[in-house]
Length: 133
Length: 74
Image (cartoon, rainbow over all chains, first blue to last red):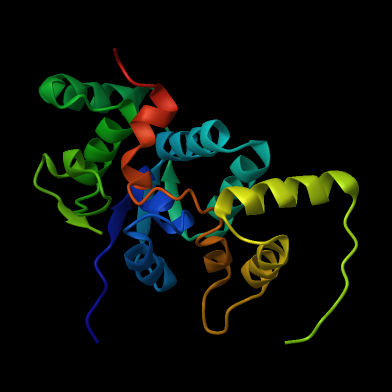
C-alpha cells in the first residue's frame, strides 16, 4: 500500500473544509477524511480562530477550536527560536506580502522536510512546496 | 419523512430564523441541517462532523483570510 505523504496545513485548508460554500470544500473533505501525518503552526490556529471571530461570532470560533482539538494535527508553537527562523522568510520574500503565519509555515516545512502543503494560497508554494487542494 | 415538534426558546428561534433567512432556507430546513450536522456519518472520523459547519455563500472563502483577519490595506 502506498504511504500517504505527510503535509503542512495552512489556514486556508481548514477554512475550505469548514465552510461548505468554498469551492475547495469537497476536495478538503476528502483529504481530511483520511489524513496523513499533519503539521501546522500555532499562528494558523490563531488565524483560523480570528477568521471565525470576525466573520461570524464567538460560538463558531469556539467550535473551530473544538475541531482543532479533535483533528489529528501536530501544532508547533511559536517561540523566540521559531520567530528567528520565520523572520528569515519574511525578509526573503518581502515582495510576497507573507503574513507571519505564512512565513512560519514555510520555515516549518523546511525544518521538517515537508514537501506537501495543504493550502489554497499560492504564496505557500514560493519555496517549491507542492500545493494540495 | 417523520413530523416532529421541537421547542426552542425565543432567542434561539429568533437566531435560527435570522440564519435561515440569510441562507435562503426555511427554519425547518435549517433545523434539519443542524440535526444532520450533529449526527455522526458512518465511516467518517469524528472531526469530520465539523466539515461544512458554516455556509458563507462565498466560493472564495478560503482566499479571504488575510482580508478578514488583518483587514485590507488602502
